[in-house]
Amino acid sequence: MNHQALSSFIWSVADLLRGDYKQSEYGKVILPFTVLRRLDCVLAATKPAVLAEFDAKTRQGLNPDPFLTRKAGQSFYNTSPLDLTTLLGDQDHIRQNLYAYIQAFSPAARDIFERFDFYTQIERLAKAGLLYLVAEKFAHIDLHPATVDNARMGLVFEELIRKFAEISNETAGEHFTPREVIRLMVNLLFIEDDDVLSPGNAVVRTLYDPTAGTGGMLSEAGEYLHKHNPQARLTLFGQELNDESYAICKADMLIKGQDVANIVAGNTLSDDGHAGRKFDYMLSNPPFGVEWKKVEQDVRKEHQEKGFDGRFGPGLPRVSDGSMLFLLHLVSKMRPAVDGGSRFGIVLNGSPLFTGGAGSGESEIRRYLLENDLVEAIIGLPTDMFYNTGIATYVWILSNKKADDRKGWVQLIDASGFWQKMRKSLGSKRKEMSDEHIATVTRLFGEFAEAELATVLDADGKEQDRLVLLSGEQAPAAPEGGKVRVAPISRVFRNEEFGYTTITVERPLRDEAGNIVLGQKGKQKGKPQPDSALRDTENVPLADDIEAYFEREVRPHAPDAWIDHDKSKIGYEIPFNRHFYVFEPPRSLHDIDEDLKAVSANIVAMLEGLAE
Image 1 (tube, helix red, strand yellow):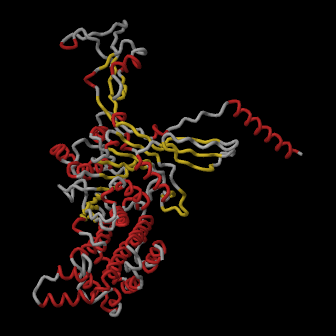
Image 2 (cartoon, helix red, strand yellow):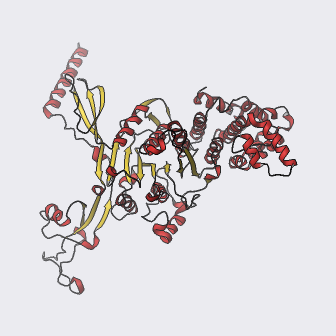
Image 3 (tube, helix red, strand yellow):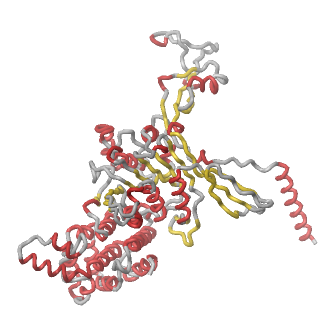
């Protein structure tokens, strides 16, 4: 059974709830019961051994905890002789027995059900006479890892959450990221680290996600590394604000044998659950365009009091979009380069690339990142890739351990055309990246190459073929009557090419007679006074000499102008789309005129035919 069929089967429990529960409340029952059944199946094989050990160690007066986790073969256990199947044997006492069963879980597992507020739902189901029926439904679902592996189980949870979010008009994208986007990010994260990926090399590394959701990014990264190097060990860390997502993430980590103390609940921006820690790798998909007013007081306090010793030293973005705060948070978690350094990937919308002029919080953050040579690459993704938004999104890869040939450079990759249509849309998600698309982007990044995409079109303008051309490679010949469209898809720039100086250009104030008004006292005495109505600004690229630029671009149009150097500010922006724009000349007027004549003649002929 694939994950969609399995989630549909689990979803069928909703038929029982209809009437007693609103549609938007189904998840409060189905999600915790799914987790319970999963834990139930995972512990089934070792249950007798755990019960025997619990009995023996309790009689000896010893703390049974370390012995029970060893017997269970997991980082959690349950000391009740009951399970979901045996609970069905006593229909009259199912409520009390289910309580007792959940209470018998080890503390970390018990916390999961408390986060779901599961006890409230048990009471409500019992009152409605539905508890036995729902428990019976789940008892007949086999969620053992041998039947449903961890990867598929993660997809089942995501599918269920997406459905619940859809029917309650919530944003599913806040809880998880499409798997192919995670795969791309994980590929880019590990590609340059041969020591980690080499089979047999028993390295230990840490991975952190400050917006962990249901744990999809952490899981995918762990599975990727295990596939390439089974001896490597990835210790996973995360923090999540939403209680239900946190509970699912924690359950997933429990089953995978990770230390669940590393998964923390709470708001990452106002209460850093991993303060003082540094990590080897990090991944994040923070919410797009979500204001940070709720945590504004804490964030501003840290910015003002701690400066660069805190997380938000470089600057603060506008309150309407907090995604750049997560970017700064990750930068603060980078392991120093002398200790091996860090690399991280973060998904952002277009706003952090260019929002804010010189001196603004956003520009200062970009300035800090580029002047400290932290930005390795930015990849533009196709639109309609995420469940809750169709806008353009970008993956930023940052590193403080750049290879020598990358130092001082940023690679931009336009992967917006690398997609295939999904058979069935999921919310706003209509497109997906294939394995081949992911491999192409990974190769372009790995080779740090400039490249173009050649699209071969036939005489009717239909696409025949697409070829990625690395620098120096020739485009294929055009078919008869057709053409080959060539556009850049990978470009490399020096960090300073994204910087500019905003200069203030002043023009003199004139009196009614047209004479320049001069200052009368102080430093301004005898100097022309500026006319604020004529004031203008110019952005001068950092590579240009400001005076030479002024003489070339401004003086010919305003001979009396001057620069107020005290108002000059340095800014940074990354005009991503501009660097990939290819001008296509419009058709000639003659061709358009000929087409119009042909269409007009056709219409006249049709009208004459009707008149007959």
